[in-house]
Amino acid sequence: MRLEYYVVDAFAERRFGGNPAGVCVLDEWIDDAVMQAVAAENRLSETAFTVRQPDGGYELRWFTPTCEVDLCGHATFGAAYALFGFHEQEAGRIDFRATMKGYELSCERDADMVRMEFPRIVPVPFRCGDDLGAALGVEPAHVLATDRDLVCVFDDEDAVRGMRPDFGLVAGLAHGLSVYVTAPAADYDYVARAFWPKIGIDEDPVCGSMQSALVPYWSQRLGRSALVCFEPSEREGTVWCRDLADAVSISGHGRLYLRGEIEV
Image (cartoon, rainbow, N blue to C red; front, side, top):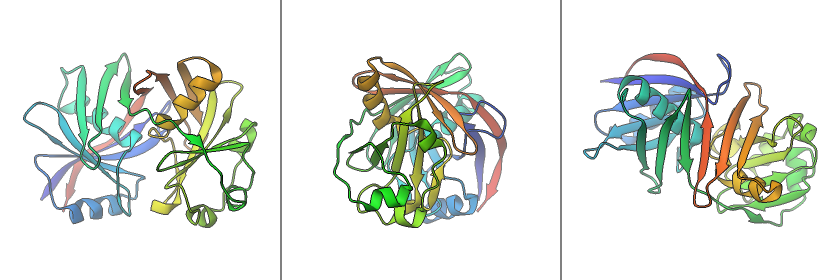
């Protein structure tokens, strides 16, 4: 069996920047074990699998090298970028339904960008133990949490840029499928990084889904809805965001790296 396959660098301002996402465009769903094996073979943070539905929308699932996840930003971006380029050339918008939790996600062409609308997830103050500072190597000024993730806020962007976590300790934290670290920035509204060692990803190079939680926080703190986030991983990337009150808008540039087929 051959699978149509793409790799898209999401939120990339340069070639070989941003976050590479695998994208498999399927005619129909294949066995979960095969999708997991493909994601493990790819060794990218996430591989997206998508199937067109009779209503013109697409169902969407995401797999890390070790498990399926319920929400992923950069691989949604990658799926939209590939579909706009090779399947939906005349479309201005693509609607996705995330199979695992039923999220309704939309992606639109926005000049030379792709703009996504994602759930708005407001983090709340969270009491964490001393193990968090030991795991990150720096004590955060504030800690917040969603049902799934931890949000660690720092006063100094250099603390975020220079952070070298102990990923074994991060993986051992009681709460947080992922840990987001963020701080106000001199040249952007804020910087942020995303650590996911619990699911086999030490650092997601440029994470889109964390903006679901960060945008409500920074919008309230800075008093404006339009925000620009820089993610200073080794590959780095820039994300343009907007707080829409009932959703979060996430935009960026993309680069196609690979188009081909996978034999399974």
